[in-house]
Length: 328
Image (cartoon, rainbow, N blue to C red; front, side, top):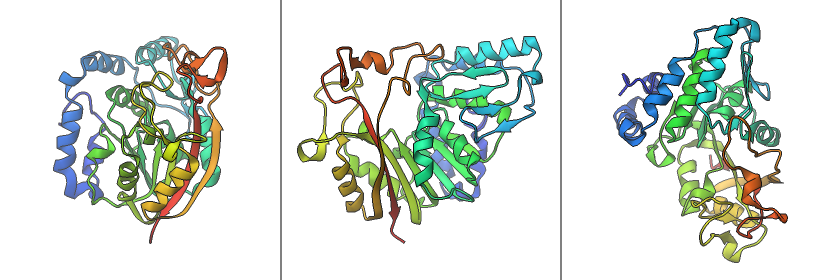
């Protein structure tokens, strides 16, 4: 598996001592997820990554809203065009933004806005070992490193996200952040090694939300911190709203919970210091169509006559941030 052209940065992950007892398990799960027969576009995406010019960034800033990798003068004009074309070919880019030399990747989501809402409420990340579940391209993982995390493992089964991560890692070459193309269901249940676990934008895709919360808990060290960001709804029978068909054109939305129900679920999973620290209605400026994500976005998923509702007539997306601690 480690020789696969699609997984050039996975070796760091498999070689780390904290995962040594689970190497065979991870190799099996990653090989299955990354099987080219499951992803017909993989060879094409790899060609785009291979087309990126070789360059060494003279400046890196993982704390910037647009993660900064190099400056324009690090590349010749031809290299700059080559870089832009290869990165643009990997679209859609959904989570960011990134400033890669002179190319600005204007992603669908202003993920920096979410980080600005999360950061004031979480524990200091200095020296912490962090897991980011459903990490997308890895934008928030880079921000976690920028805020002092010692190591971050991001997991997401999307191979397009893996290739976008590979494109960014080509220039950052930072062994403190590994990306494994797996889901949380692929994580061993006896791997309670993370000081902080983030699950942002995952819970509502789970048919059974308490199971997801228990999976997150079991990956935390005693006293570790869970950061849960999810869709919320003001009211619902039993505290959980399950759309009959689609929600904002998404088919796989199974459980949008009220704040009270989310807190109840966290407490039932034996978390302590459970609290909701932020709630925010997603705006058309935070999630939108761009040149780098040219498909329909939030605007097309809302009722054009009343953007407080989805196109199906449900309450428009509202998100809550919850913090909790695993019992010591």
